[in-house]
Length: 507
Ligand SMILES: [Zn+2]
Ligand SMILES: [Zn+2]
Image (cartoon, rainbow, N blue to C red; front, side, top):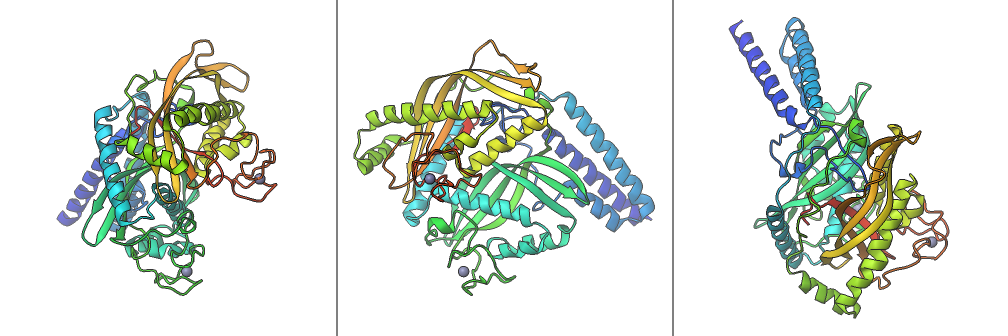
């Protein structure tokens, strides 16, 4: 009996610790504007990483605890304990709902600039080792893997990820994933958090903001979360070419990921050892997680960050000079041209489409992830019976914050200062939040990408950048129905890839 009491004591302590840890992350989501005017992840500045807790590889903390209780204790003890867990969880959530407007501070400009510069130096070092390294393509790979990880979690297909995951992950999915299904995965912003160079290995940590629906034994819950994924790869190898990075593929032959348990590609028969040709995930942890709610959608906080100085890329002029040489142009003239004909035009058109609740007309201007992201938010508003309006939009200024070049992609980040009427109405036209009469000033960092080698900067935005036909028939996958070509990877024109709010931007 003493032993049993001891076990109960340990489990109750674990329970209390767990609830304590979960408390700060049950914040409400507050969101408006295409890029998440207030904050994508709820609570703002979740990047600070404070109070982070580690989830076990996609595990569900409370679910796992219940599993433990069932396994370790006789039912007459475990069942009352489980009821207690739910009662406590209910009160914790209720209490946190009362304090829903809590805003966590985000790291200051200086801290973010330092972080930005450090990562920048590390990426430059990585490019010296691997001339094929492209941040754009690496993040594409990360997003594909994240998506497939959760889409396939607990299913037969999960073993197709064997070259990209540790065997513990594969076993975890087999043991705990049977009753779990994850759907409607939307990836928000991704940020490289750190890069480590070891003698034989290179490690990159990536913070991923996402949301998805988790179904456990038929019960669906939508979560919004930030995860940190740690990637490793052998030092001294070259990144595969773009086609093998843009979707999850065999790094040898490029066929869609279809592997045996031991990592042999079913198309080319090559055994893909972890980290020898492609990045693999060493581990991943959940930094913040909360249940997704729509109650805060019409709620407006004062803008934060608009007055903060621009965070410029370190040594930006070096890249600018290289860019000017590459394209044989004058940097100052070109930035003026880009500000007017790309940055401002794209923003006005995208905001207009957002207000009309119809992204079809701007599909050609958005990368796939950006589009999925915006669609998700538009649908969220719609389901809540709300519409976010952005009217009288004026561009106050455009500042060049960064430019990046690699073998395959060019990217430009501008900080765009805007004034607009920004408000939320319901389907009957009643004002639910914001102001339809008072202009709101804010700024956002917009990152555009384009394939290296493309020369033309602007084109008629109402047309397909490849064939010139009207851009009225571009499917969700970004393929122009007239020419049958995918036009949203930046192969023909600039596409908007990322929007970051000024109070969290760090490059
Ligand atoms: Zn293959
Ligand atoms: Zn076309």
